[in-house]
Image (tube, rainbow, N blue to C red):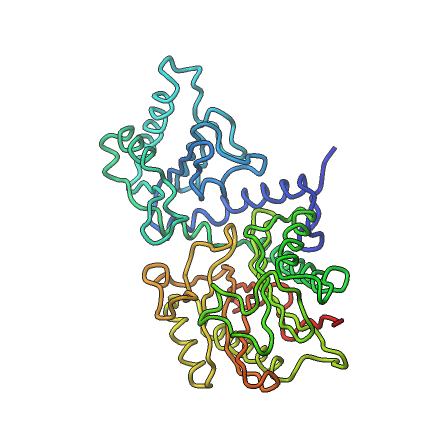
Length: 435
């Protein structure tokens, strides 16, 4: 019987078996269509990705078949660039999905570990690569997954070839940040799902004004995502702002304006930060809602203006998101444009894909708006996805001039056609019925 995987853009979330089919198909496509160009760009002829069970290189996890939930014993993947493309081989005790099996310990009388490294040496000698990439990096943790022990063993096994070892940072980051069109399409559906779950959380079916707390909502979101089969990759954050309370701290990331265990009340601004995992991909989204007071049919004009100001800062930032610029250049240009319009805000956007805080150009950090050394110096490239994360601080006349911190986060894709939003961009507050 042949199983046909449903379209991931239309059926979200997919059953686990269908997800595995989609992920393995994507992996094959990525190895065939993406990896040769990425290796050429990085100047890496042969890439060694090594990890042991439960101590996997983050890159290794993105190369394993969907049925592998971890490495098995020591798993060594060898990716060799040749005129015919990339030969993907596994020097592993167990078969590894699409990778060619390159080692059989039964055929070698030596101890398994010695035999395994000897096979790696044989492959390298046969390929005679000019540069052998290994995952070591100063600027990107996700590209720094080769353990100290594995690094030593590689050098010992390769002997004179060890002189050709080089950081595969450029290759690893490129592999992690680059998205297939099919992956971007799936992220549209996943980001829409986040919006639907948040709107459910903000509905009377879940939120009882005067009873439900921010902590209750955070745990409901986590449970709901788990029940849907799209596990969160961080514990959801829900916080409240209301009139006549101390404003959030300078960055709004450490102390809530209202304690988490205080019930939601009419007139509150309810903010949440949620990220889910599905199909090997992550999302990272923030949403804002307003609890209507008796007699209100809309949020106060001051809060609506704060959201519009946040949307404007999004526009100014996406206008600067151009392939070839560095993350620090995007940050500086967007902050300059915001200052020219009198917008008080911070920008702290980041790549998202295989990982929630992905490898690639950092565009500010919430606690440092001067630029990010290293990660912020990396250039933006097409076919990448980001969490457009930022906030603005705006005084609200209806709250006696008290400032509100409007925090927004949306998934966006940067392609040759420019920037597009993934899912539905929030331009209006979610209205929550009051008591």
